[in-house]
Image (cartoon, rainbow, N blue to C red):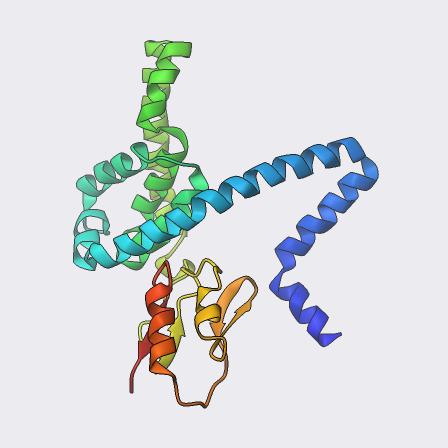
Length: 240
């Protein structure tokens, strides 16, 4: 019973979704079938897009220095940070959920809450490629007024959000890590390659990789293979 309770706690949101779908099927079967079809479509889309996003985010994490992010998107970036945030969100491609791992990487490297809100909001509602379609169907005047009001609203809401949400409210990696094999579960995409390469050390729990409790002598060849093959570079080994 304790094991079942633990599993439910770890997957509470998933359990709520399953119960909601069950209720829809009982009350309105036709709506339930439509809901499952739509969910399947979006799940398929996410499975195709998110691995690419995780890889690109991990590469940017490695290539872009923290000092650069702090200079151009940090709390002291002021107007240039706001402008760059609008550009990053405006030229983006892909659905909004693709922005979340990208933004948490930026925050980890020093981007401010205000600029993250601007990036997410711009990504969602003022993508530059979509403005041409807006002009085509609704006209230049409508697009210009709507765009200007949207930008003003985003700036205002980003300022409000920065006053309410603090840096410590967002997930972050600890400043000092323990020795041994470490997995960044925020970056992990649950591909299980590490488990295949080193099953004695790694396992999948709650759709994420984790390190088993071990007192064995590590196999350097297997460990290095698991680290090198991780597509999002989520595995590290901190030596004593």
